[in-house]
Image (cartoon, rainbow, N blue to C red; front, top):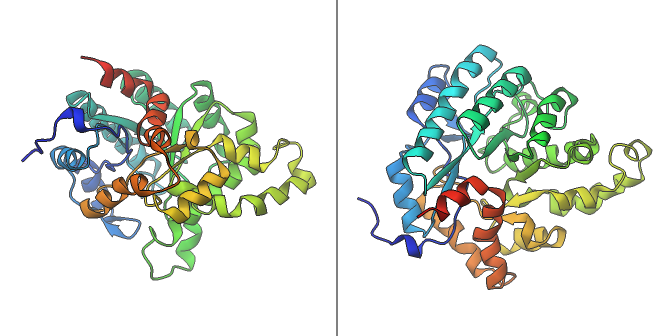
Length: 330
């Protein structure tokens, strides 16, 4: 049964998650023996349930994405078959509920050729709002690897919004620990590509990509000064000449599972509120935890009302003009 809350009471526009977990995706992965993401079994998901959770938490709209474990499992044909299906489901959802859902497109990395083809289809034909990329790929490469330069150059040409979500990196498979990956590996898989994108010169060369990184940048705010010591390293002078702190300040960071005083104070030492967007983690984070994440920014004493509104609403609308246009239509 749908919540009776009115549209006027909904103020937060775009927690990117609900993670999109359509039946087609879950069934395809089950067929190759994959039934969880980050150590959490795939939860049941439906548009109707997602809308109830959004209404219960005064969320006006959400931008869906398929995140970990992604679509590429060292089988390019499998990924190329699955990706358009996922993006078409996302587009239909946004079409059926244009004032409630947008979507980030899934791409079949590390298959760069397939990713470029799907990027054109997803953004030009399906008119999705941006893309989601996993921080590390099934071949073990992090974003920032030169193998991905052609894709990132095209994303830069389009000034695309790129949401970066962690997964279980291939290197961990050799020496796993018995802790769910969302609590152990995900924060570090978030951090490594941030540094690699800077160290490789990708952020310097391609400044138009608007990258959003999960979990308040994970360890990046804590390690920022340590990373800045790389400015003294001679091999960094050419690819990232302006310095680590400058590049960290160009990126955007979400509040998913990080809307707490410890993480937010650290993040706000690194960037201003204009670089922070409100995200949540439903349905992998169940409804009660999702609700706590939604309420946390309001209880943080580091935000006055204008800053909180920017983080919860305005910053997302600047990033996502297509969603903004849908919300503004009568």
